[in-house]
Length: 269
Image 1 (cartoon, rainbow, N blue to C red):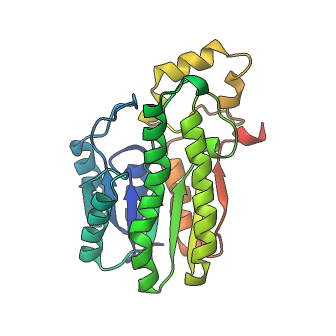
Image 2 (image 1 turned 45 degrees about the vertical axis):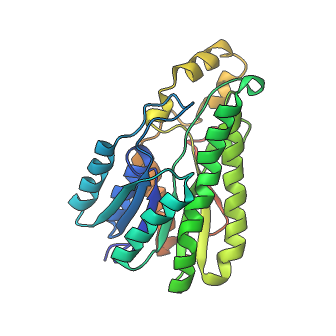
């Protein structure tokens, strides 16, 4: 029997990258997928945005695993749109067992030069968006009365001081706070909450020339803080999805309130 047979997972940022990998992996383990992605350009984020075609491709990949998907365009900052997307999927599948609050963006600048617009967009998506994703699903998960697993995507930048990315770093530290608070509040309902902390992952987020340039200008001083301990530059999205599947499953039934590092030794250097 598959580890998530008959379960349903709600994933944000599902159109590509880590979100897509999570959807495909959880589907391969037997879960149906509810998902959202903004599929539109950002105001200050320079990463190439996901598209509706990307969202459709994720749906097709889930279906190729023999599972069903309800994937919709929604901005995690828009609580009403996010709730509507979740409610549509919940109405179709009739349950919710796993939440993966994955949507996130990265903006780059010296801390004292970062614009208000960059700060607000980063915090809105990475922090408020995570809270919104949990807020959308938790009432149904509690009323279901069968427990569940909530997995919040933080970063190694949520555990140490990463330069040039103050909005991202602050928001990812904030995600840890959300995870810890929810783990305490939801334990009586047998709902587990954990944060995951990947090092750099091979997605569009690593294709930001200005970050590469800023690291190069401080290669001898600040550059090393971005380096992994193990001999790998970037992890694959599927590497993170494997950990998500474990945390979603009963194999992790007594793991909650944890910060799970997938850091290739970065934080042990």
